Length: 363
Image (cartoon, rainbow, N blue to C red; front, top):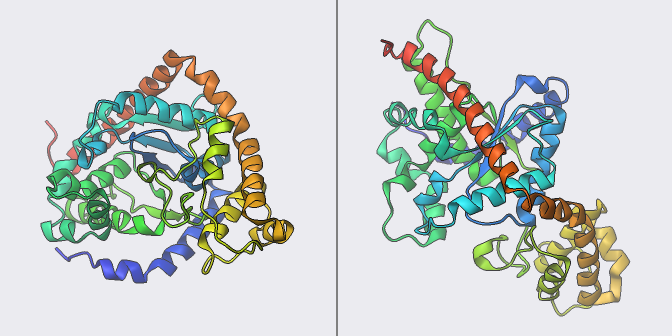
């Protein structure tokens, strides 16, 4: 089999951007032509990086009428986390965040489901593993980065096969668009390759079983943590959590990093910490970061932080109120998950029927 050249993937980013723009335009006209697959690992509550980076976009797509599958990847937590005692609770917390942000499986074409409740998805793992080489798995740049960031010394096989597992997640429901950032393109390229190799090997003279999914590239720039130097992350303690109250949010922002220059300007290259806080204000209000900086002017870091505190709490107030309401109804959350798992299983069973047919495994 022809090996995947990940260097070519990096070079093709511009092409991915152009394809993403065309898909965005077509979504407005033909939303039912697509199926989105997206999701999160249940490692804890979501923060504003998730909200601005992915949650708002999921709600937008769902409101457009795009069929949307939201996977809670509980199995994938095991690839680089030893602690599994909180997976169940974290799964429910994710659903609360989703619903509070505006996703509504009862009114939108949205299915929310936990991975471990959909065995049909995992049945694709064995045939898919025969379509990739060990070298391709070990060279995947996203896997390398995740191993490094997790500080893993003994890497289990689940980590190396993570891109194949992700291909199962996307292809079992025939997802054809996947919202990703640039760093996730290698994973998606693996999925596209597996789909192509499966169709070429097993579907000769027949209609292909799997689509080759396209990237829907994130429009929101990477959000730095409140330390102003690294990506926002729970493990780095530099976040604003969606579940926090207004006082907790104010306290966290008060500790945010700025710099010694009292005159506030928007300069992402030379003043990344200040620029990041300005961008967060912009995400809350829709105003350009440079205009916000001009208005604050010589008000300094204190005014910058107080402005961010005010607009952030205002932005999240409805979400947090809905969160508190949903927390009082755990049975409803469980109902959403069980219904979603049942719907996902129905989709998976139909796909497996097609897979067994083209692989001549029917009895």
